[in-house]
Image (cartoon, rainbow, N blue to C red):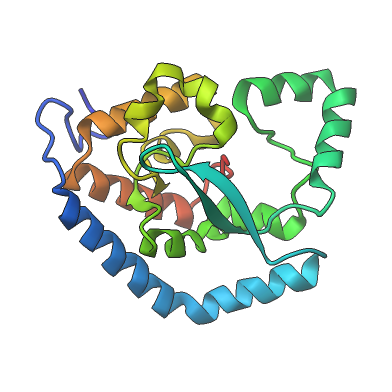
Length: 222
């Protein structure tokens, strides 16, 4: 069975698994190098976020950690300061939007997102601060998407399995549909990754992630 949908890159029958120290070494080397190289670019994004909308430059979101603890995942802020009020008003007044939010956990047209935030999400540049989370050992380059504490019920009995590996900056579900996936499909893809992860799969996911960043087709999903 092909793990990367639409591409016969890796098969789940013969996965080449990662030795944990090796994966960690690659994570630190790549994430640390990218942080150094992209520092001026990151500073430019930070200035743009601060100038174009009021509020903090970074947004910290609590996520479930490897081993079922919690950590703060960092992103460039993409939403207005009164984001939750805007969302509550929309969901209360628009039944179609409310149904979409229940099904996908997000909205295609989100009143909370700033104009700059739309670009950052579409290009995934808002997630670059998570390179620091990787260096700290809280995340990996590739893994299941970081889970909100409120998603414990969604993952149910599968949660401990998904949290047996570090969450990733990118992952299988991010390159398999992103905005078009339901929550149930994201759970399935997270489990597929955990059960068949290895160097070849991670490389294939990183290559497809790079393609999507250069030619984005869906907005960030968390």
